[in-house]
Image 1 (cartoon, rainbow, N blue to C red):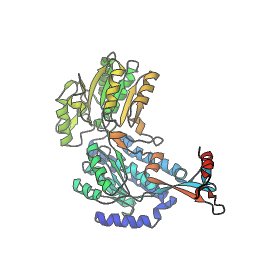
Image 2: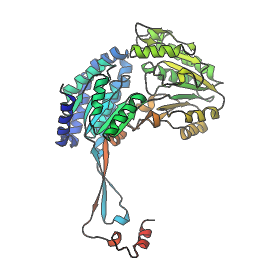
Image 3: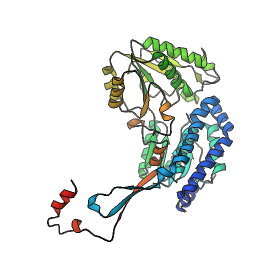
Image 4: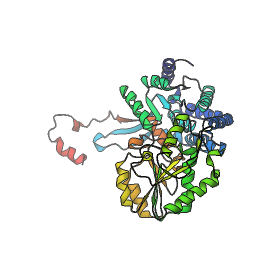
Length: 456
């Protein structure tokens, strides 16, 4: 692997050659990436199992499958989405023609996290390629097996002058961020996101930040509690809670609280048995640092279910914590693990002002049959996105954009949103030379009266 300076210099040279601006080249690149992923599918699954103990099913549907869907969406739709668009021109600019072009940014840096290490590195790359950019991928150092297979796939599929993978720890991250890119796409914690934004500001580089936050899960007294318990248990256990849009805490009406707890426990044990922390399909905590952090949080509150862990495997059982207040340690940070605090309420008006006073979360989940409550929460609470009567699944589509708001991030991607994120909309007005209406030129005389009629 050449130095970062050399790779970036060669990528800029390749981009300036114009090769990536050809639509056929982009489509061919996506097909090559898709074929390479399929060729190395077993290796990807094995790497994800080694890093996070993900089952083959979970690894495929949450990592490989999502990237393949993104590629297929782009192959079907990118031609139409990237096509130049003619728009109306104001009468004041007659005679003119107004056109919007999608222009690649150029050289993109994609910094991906460890929790979905394959998907969150490759899904943004699909958008970057579709829009005609060159890219450097910096995968997480915490998921070395997946980072290695990403490097293998990319190096076999593309010349590093086009797409390159650079591995390493914090020093490599710092070095990359000291260089000038045309766009930085970062997925990770808010703390690191602030560093990325600060570094990017020195070069006036635009950034996309996919962060996280404490995503609430609200269950009211009208909800289908059996289904809510099942879907909440699934969403919280997925990747052992190490999901940026995992339900972080429960806000449940006191009249259905006990029933909901019973349903969550019942479904966890259906999924993973009475000892989830020993089940082969239950993912592990990524490393010792996060394992110890979660253990300390469990010990800080009132556990009503779970709380067990295996030091040898870094697995922690789904843990329900009751009698939780807004000031408890588990409510001060994004949990990013299989801990689910429970706060009960009697009236919606109790918690809506509290939600709106806290940092805006990446997701919100509402289980209800009440159209009134659905409308109220959707209208009055700001968050990245979410589900009504389900969890997680809103991000598993190429037909809606995914992203945060406020403290949970900025920018969107997936499907058509990736086209907007990884390309610049360049607006061009072509003015006729056959006529030159004198209205805009001094001396203005009585021009104001006519201007008011035209620009009202």
